Image (cartoon, rainbow, N blue to C red):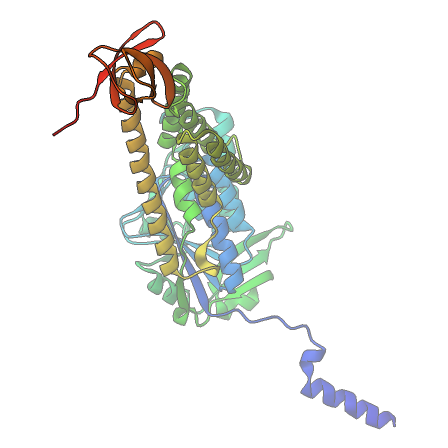
Length: 458
C-alpha cells in the first residue's frame, strides 16, 4: 500500500508540477513606446503615471519614453523620477529624435531611468536650477539638494556620479558619444528598433552591494549569474517585440495647455479684469467669465487639485444651466456648458483600454466643433448686446405714440379705444371716428390719447 501511494505521489509531481509549484505568468513580448515632449509640468507627470498603468495592464516587457525637453518644474520632475524608480516594468528613457535635447529636468529623468539611451546629435545636461524669470539660483541650499538628488539616482543606476554632479554645479553638457564613454548612458541608437536590437542578449539586474543597498546594472545575459541580484529582467528576443505606441488621453492635451506658465498668468489677468468689468457692468456675463478664469488659474498654479476641480466644474456647470432655466439670461447656459466640457476633459481617461483611436479622433473633432460653435454663439450674443445698448429704450406712455388701435365706442370727438391691449379714453383730432375703425395715437393729453383715423389704403 505504501509503494502504491509513493508511486502516485511521484507520478503526480512528474505529470502535474503546476499543482505544487508557484506559477508566474510570462511577460508578453510587447514594448510600450511613449513620447514626452516640451516643458515638464504636472500634466507630464500625469502622462507618465498613465503610461506606467497602461504598460502594467498590457503586461509589457519594457517601456520606452522618447524624451525631448528643455526641462520643467522641479516638483513635477521629482515625482516623475519617483514613478519611474518604483515601476515594476523597466523604463528606458531615450533622448530622441536625433538633434534634440533633454536638458535640466530631462537629464534628471534620464538618470532615474533603468536604461538611459541617446540618439545621434542629442544633448543632455545644464541642470543648474533657475527661477521662473530665468535667473540662475546660486543658493547652496537648493544647489546642494538638487546635486544630491541627481547623484544618488546616478549611483542607484551605476552611472558616473562625478558627471551627474557637474551637470548641476558646472552646467555640464554631453553629447551621445561622450555620455557613453563616461558611463552616463548605456546605449546609443537612432530609432526604437535599433535600440531594441542593441538590448538583445542583455539583462537588467538589481544587484546587492556590500553595504546592504542595491543598484541597477545592464550586463550581458551570459554574465548575469556572476552577480548577486534580487531582480532580473532578460531582454532575449526583444528585438522581435511588438511596438505599441501610447496614445495620450484628452486630459493630457487640455492640462498641458492649462499648466503652461504663460497660460496660468494669462488666465489670472483675464479673470481679474473680467471680474472687475462684471462688477462695473453687471448682467453681460463678464463676472462669470472672470470667475471661471480665476478658478482655472488656481488649478494651473496647483492650488486646487484636478479631481476636486473637475467635480466642482461639473457641479457649477449643472447649477448654471438650472439657473438659466429660471432667468433666461443666455450667458449662464453658455458658461454652464463650458464648465461641463472642461470638467469632462480633466477626467477623460486614456483611450488605450476604452476605445479605438478612430473614435478618439471623432470625439476630439466633436469637441472642437462644439468649442467653435460656442465661440460663434458667444460672439453673436456680444454683438446683440452691443446693438441693444445703442437702441433708446422706450418706457411708459412713450410706447403709445404711433401705436395703432381701434375704436371701442364712437369718437364724437371723445370716446374709448383699445391700443396695445389696453383701454384708453381718446379724443379724435380729425372729425368723428366710428366704432371698430382703426386709429393711430398722435399724442397724450393727461390721461387722454389724441388720435386720428387711419385712412384705408387703396
